[in-house]
Image (cartoon, rainbow, N blue to C red; front, side, top):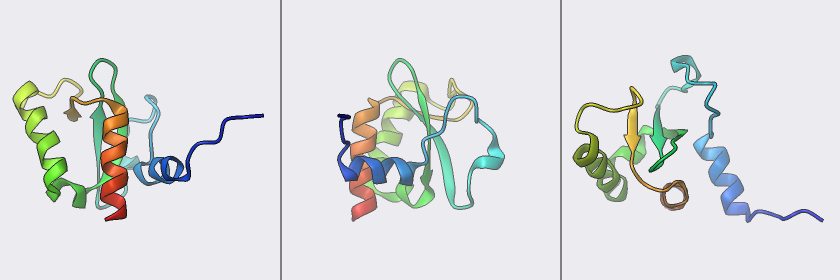
Length: 97
């Protein structure tokens, strides 16, 4: 018998459109979305709606990224230095609000 993931986690992954490391193509980002790289040691690419960028909780993550990396982002894109599970939890709450 397999382990069942909570439905919130499954819907969050669908919303975020988790991308594999091989698909880092700008053309795979839908209009109104932005790709971000999340992780403290190893990063994973997520595609999120740009509306998240105005939410205070997301702004705090952006400020942390600015403090850590400034304008020199190591992945060539926006890198957010937080744990993946924290990011998924935050974005799942943003999606339901």
